[in-house]
Length: 145
Picture 1 (cartoon, helix red, strand yellow):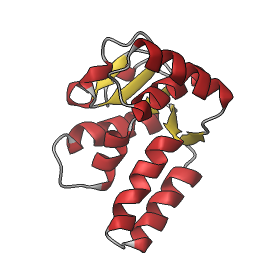
Picture 2 (spheres, rainbow, N blue to C red; picture 1 turned 180 degrees about the horizontal axis):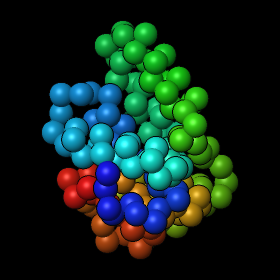
Picture 3 (cartoon, one colour; picture 1 turned 90 degrees about the vertical axis):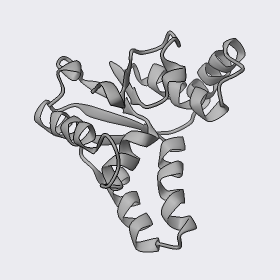
Picture 4 (cartoon, rainbow, N blue to C red; picture 1 turned 60 degrees about the horizontal axis):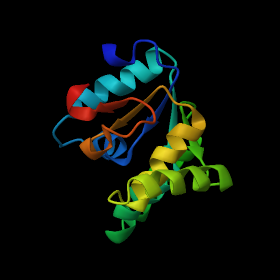
């Protein structure tokens, strides 16, 4: 379990957290396993942007592993702890504001940050240290879990 999420009710999972969970032979797997244990034991709701959803299912589709893509789709769409959050006008407007103040960020990153901000998550779990100084929600780097 990870103490950093002690009082969290809602977190945004960025793409690397889910990729590490699915690709079992990666660095930080122990940290992600602890994260998911904490999510389930502390009843934390995870928000996932449709950008992350698209990134996650693209990798197995490129490899023509349609069964894995379907399995990942089912995991993200049907989990009782994960909610997919759409890119609506509110998220788009917020992303545009973030992008205008941080034009060096990739647009997909600003959409994820805007999703977290719109949903009011307690933390964002990512490996993207470029997000640390963005003043939305607190960032927890996967390496620091």
